[in-house]
Amino acid sequence: MDRDKILLTPGPLTTTLRTKLAMLRDWGSWDSEFNAITASIRQSLLQIIHGSNDYTVVPLQGSGTFSVEAAVATVVPANGHILVLDNGAYCKRAAKLSTMMGKKCTVKTFDEAQAVDPQVLEACLQADPSITHVIMIHCETGAGVLNPLQAVSDVCKNKGVGLIVDAMSSFGALEIDTRQVQFDALIAASGKCLEGVPGMGFVFIRKAILASCEGNSMSLAMDLYDQYQYMEKTTQWRFTPPTHVVVALHQAIAQFEEEGGQAARLARYTANYQALIDGMAALGFQPFLDPQVQAPIIVTFHAPKDAKYDFKQFYLAAKDRGFILYPGKLTQIETFRVGCIGAIGPNEMKQAVLAVKQTLTDLKIQTVA
Ligand SMILES: *Cc1c(COP(=O)(O)O)cnc(C)c1O
Image (cartoon, rainbow, N blue to C red):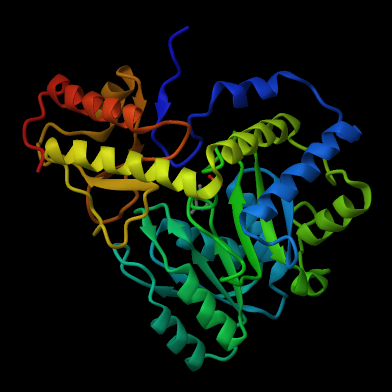
């Protein structure tokens, strides 16, 4: 078998052999050995945010969006009013699912090339005291923008409104320290910067608000309060757990800790990012974002200007050379995205740049910028 293609996407990601090998066993969901693994994962996750005292973490089956939906359903009461700080595609998804979960939802739109503005948030909260919760996306994976978690958290705390953070593509890589930031709920998933396989999410919930979450969810499967209560009482997952995903995440977290935790992961992804943008710049590719707002997670590049460029062909040619690129998600301009995350280092990024160079030659694309 050929080597697996390297995934330069925002999840699923390239995983290590050790993580893949963890999935070669079957587990019973009532088995105490398996449930000890779940408990150990929860403990490790809480340590990453320094939240063992004030927060709990509730895992949930499904892709990351399932957990965002569950967090909104569980944390926001029926008479709540959500303000979504919108600077991209994942913000729009959060607004849509909030509305579909039956919550009143207002959207404040920002430029997708800019971070959301905490001062504008403050003015919005001032103007409409009926807002009870704010949703922000930490790293807007649509364009790759890093949003100001600390400042948004400070405004919400001052104003006494709840904060729900989608930290799906940042958690594990960017610092999130509950000794500095406060939120009601923060969501991430197995298959992103922790480098597990996809199939489960997890939601950090502030203990002080847990009691008020009872009965909020109009969905049985998405009720994190119920999932929490059941797990605390029985040590088990409420419904069939994604056993192979759980044990793979356990192995992935062990490697995360061995590597040196969040700081080491950020350093590796930053090196990946630097190798990528330096190499792509030498080929004439321009990033869409100002480096000031760019997270070292995923980079949006302007597509080549050449009339011969077509993303589908570009994708297939790069795939032939072993690398999976990602389409752009901007509405106005033609772009493509390259992820910097996963069990890869700067060498793989340099190989990816070489593959892009060869792809340009293969497709006879001459004008890049
Ligand atoms: C990946 C991601 C999600 C979840 O996407 P799924 O496809 O449901 O796993 C949500 N928010 C952000 C910011 C993401 O990057």
